[in-house]
Image (cartoon, rainbow, N blue to C red):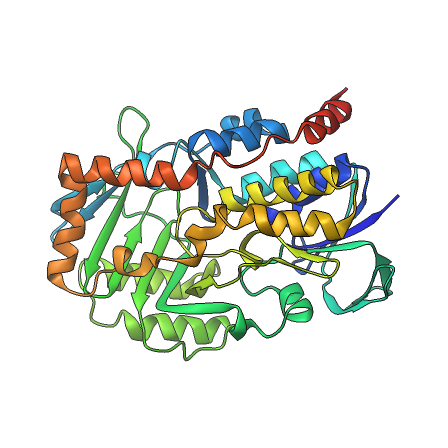
Length: 399
């Protein structure tokens, strides 16, 4: 039995674990966090390709059962007057689910067949010619046939196997912060039909969002440099506070709640600039190889990547050289969206005129229809193969 090590237990890692365990691998998933992370931002799926992969994984019904309500985002001025509405179908795709809920579903489908190790991380990788000798922070070294880096945009596996982060990740000049908070009682947050309401306020280069399933609070802002410590939450909070000082609407209250709370995360908007996602016996899946923060396609790409990697391994008879070459080639087209674009100027336009132009795209029927068609085109990729061997592996697992 071949052994596979996966770094990361969010989405891409357990998705890869699901497929590799079905193919007969002995799978270990190592995660630096002490446990699965609950809640978090909502992620969404759109179009027939995403549904095909979710159904082939056997988790479509679970995702449907745990989905969040649709959320319409009202873009308002400083007096709460509505300027435009981002419909839930645009920001939430066909189906939307909290990241933590999806991680829990994937863990439930893999916990009995995979070994999950929390509170540890990979510190060294060494190709022995017959496998990869892996050193850990807390457990003894072990040899694996394959190592999968599914540990996000700041991937430690990518750094060890490919090189320094700055060679593969491009900061986009924008930052975002997610925080938990209770919505003010004077705002309408749920409609009689069950749809949720969120509120967004812009000033040039700044966006504050309150409510909705994406996050209780979301801040997006332009900044010339990220002068904060990525491992120090207090430093991150000071960085956010500096860039939202004197911003109007309800922002002072939202900011105070965000800074006082424990549920807080800040990072740069960034995208990877990779066109090959494998090196030796190491492969990257998800944001470790193809990230574009807040770009709207990351989770779908992660599931597609895990599916294609497993499909190529099955097709190549588990010859990792042939399979990894096929994976690199197959993923070039789906990941093209991750290597271009920047969500920052759309979410936090740089001038009042650009804010008005963005808002117009939602209030004008033809402009909005064009945007919806474009997102459908990016999400649906008819070149994703139908691997019969994976279908049969799934049937054996469920029988």
